[in-house]
Image 1: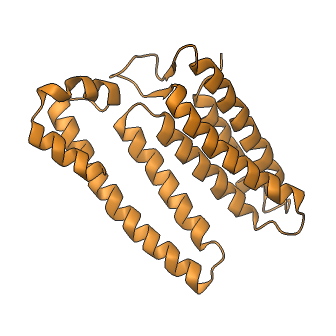
Image 2: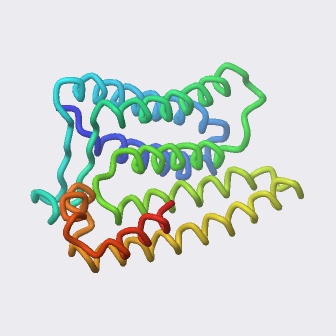
Length: 210
């Protein structure tokens, strides 16, 4: 069975492996990134096909929501997952096909982490992990923007970091409000309880998330 968790696991392994060997073996990041993102894309495509029949749901810790973390892939989210992974795959393919143009290996570590975070945002079924994946995406994006260490890129990276930090803080407040009202962080469970919670609190939380 194809499991959505594999995308997270393979991405973490690929990013860690690049960081581990790059000090000793130079210019291998593009190859590992190509293979890692290629595997992720294959899994994403398999999940998309499977989701056409029935949504793919992966549970952790052997429990079902709201007592566990879950990843969900259905046709709508599968489209965005494939878009994200395809873009990442094309980036890695470009650098593989153009020797001498590739950036430092840490670029590929950050690229994999960025794609993992974006994939997690698309697949996660609970608000806490949505926040975690959002942070991974934001931090890796900041690092990617600043990687050239030029004045313009560093300035842009700092601005992005400030904006994303404000957004993260507001999102965390929204999560706290919704948890206080519903007693759960599972998105499907929250949706089921929305008609029974304070409408003003729900509206404030929704605006903070936006």
